[in-house]
Length: 229
Image 1 (tube, rainbow, N blue to C red):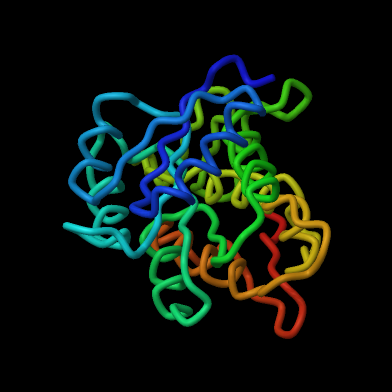
Image 2 (cartoon, rainbow, N blue to C red; image 1 turned 45 degrees about the vertical axis):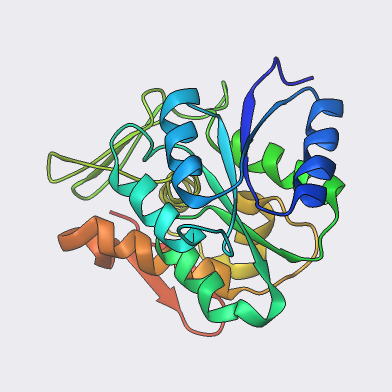
């Protein structure tokens, strides 16, 4: 069970909201519902959920704008987000990842798979006991216990997925990590899906690393590596 962690469901289709809520309750979560964009932002600030399931097609304010505002607010910036999109909205899906969403699912979707993805994202947010607490490459420092990253001494805000991705690459510096392998270990996907998910997160991660972005090397046709210091 999941000790009553709150999951905010921002979805304006009542049947979808009800179905997801049922599966979340069965998994030990506490569902919190929002039917439009402004309500999703308000409830995220008031309820401090562990994760937000965010539909792109929301009334009042679309999910992309909601995601942008949540990630710009210090109160909600660390809350992981899973976007729900229609298959025809591929550009919106990529934009959602670039805005800081941790994962996405296309409609129609399996509620059981959504619950598994929620668990995977939440697991990324929690440091494992056997992991090295502090990592460093060049002028990039990672504190896993505090979930903090500093670049040249300056604190950088990362999403749970970005933090997990950077930590894994730095921990395995000198070794090339394939896109498929990263999807499995960071996202928890056992089967290969769109590897552009990895590329989008690496691009966003490099933007946040700023002057130290080059520490993540692209190995053309295969994946990524952080070079040995």
